[in-house]
Image (cartoon, rainbow, N blue to C red; front, side, top):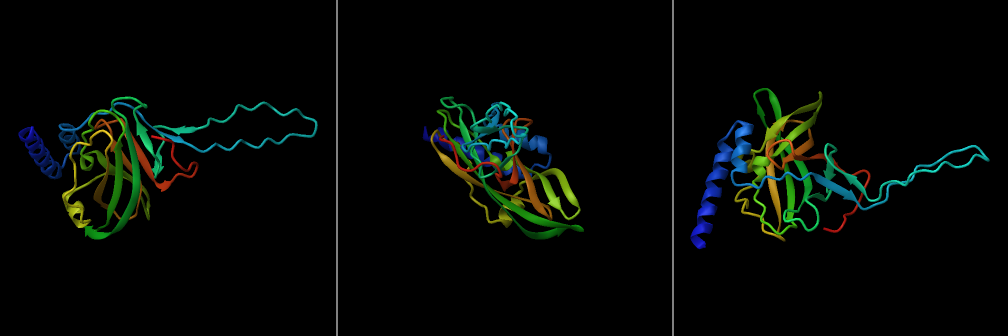
Length: 229
C-alpha cells in the first residue's frame, strides 16, 4: 500500500511539473485530466433567501391579478455566472460524486510589464469540499483560467492561465494537489499574470472543456447565506 501511495505521489509530482511547462491550453487540460476526475454534472447555486414579490399597481376597484409565486429558493445554473462566496454544488445529495465549490477571494497587484503591455499579478483562492462518497482528483492550476478582464479600454476577453512564475511571484509554493477524500475540504491558491485592470470573470473546467463553472468578481447582489450541504 505504501509503495502504491509513493508511486501515485511521484506521478502527480511529475505531472504538475509538466503542466507548468506546457504552453498549449488544450494539451495542458489533457495533462490535468490524466490524473483528474471528469465531471459531467451541471453546477448550481441555490439561494436560501426569498425572491421579492413584485409590487402590483392598479386603479381603485380593479381586481388584483393573480401572480405566480416567485421561485423560492432561487437557483442559478450555467450559462449564468456565479458570484464570489456562492456555495456552488455539483451533484445531487446522496450521489457518489457531490462537490461544493466556493470562490473565496480575488486580489491583484502591479507586475513587471510584458513588452509595452502593463501587467498585473492576479491571485485567488478556491475552496472545494468533497460531499460525496468517492475520491475527487483535481489539479486546479490546470483547470482554472481567467476569461475576462476590465481594462481602461473596456472589457478584454481571452484565456490567461496560471504559471509557475506567477505562483512563485505570489509566494504559492508546496501546494497540495493530492486526491480530495470524501468529507475533506481544501483551499487552493492560484495565480496568473494578465494585462493590467481588474479581474472580471474566472472559469473552472469540470470536464476539461465546455462543462464549466464561471464566476464574476463581485458578491451576489440577489442572495445571501447558504443552504445546507
